[in-house]
Length: 100
Image 1 (cartoon, rainbow, N blue to C red):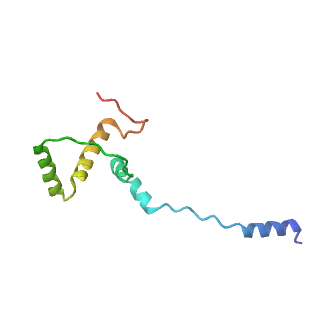
Image 2: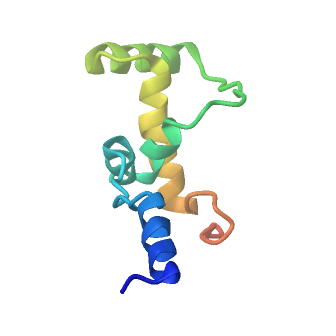
Image 3: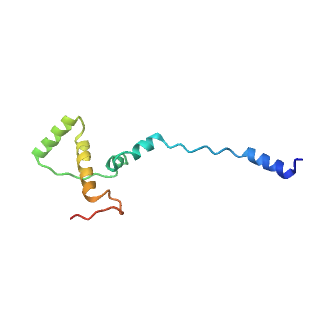
């Protein structure tokens, strides 16, 4: 015998959409696997800074950029950020290391 309560439960169960398993975005998965400095390179840029250098240092950067087939900005990003993070941490308040 079908009671009114059983019928209402049946109808209510049919109205609910089934919960699909959450699929992780493949781009997110890829980005999470990158080193921290590369992940931060993908963040939106907010401001720049002047980086003073001599003519010979500029020439050295230009040679490095040509050799690596990338911009001077990319050369600096790939050298400066990993070195700073290795020495001082990622900049998060929980892992900042004081210089010794």
